[in-house]
Image (cartoon, rainbow, N blue to C red; front, side):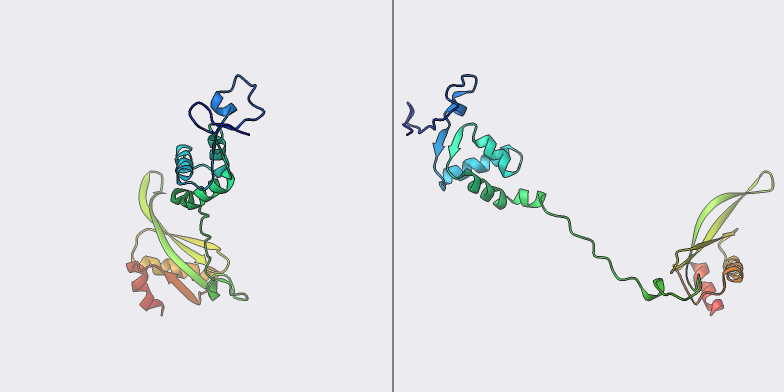
Length: 194
């Protein structure tokens, strides 16, 4: 049975009383009842002091000085009500993948039936031994198989693009559908290709 000490505090007595290397607060911790507002405030303070750790960590911290009746349930309650802990322990949302368009999974069509077209560059191309010329590249991508076809062009004009498209079509066949961005050479070539 625990008795009040000199300060009028109830202290727990246990098997650690004979270990003189521990401080007196650990050998005889102060007994605190469950459900009191002061105990809740103490647990919240220890929780923030321990940088919003899990409930087991600040139960350990509280038992260095206090023996709180029903501490585990109260500690779980403090961590579950802590807004910072809720934010830190949120599970990331899962990415919802959209359905692929029908043309991306269309089977039975030859490669490059559905083609995406884009242009990238500029970069330097060596012409002859010393002369450098600026060039661009047109990439034709099959939307079903993701195969690519590259064509080198020397400028960004519509006529140059149409010649590159003819070279592509003579090797790979005419595509059924073509997608591209709104580059001026693509837009002007659209009326010609229709």
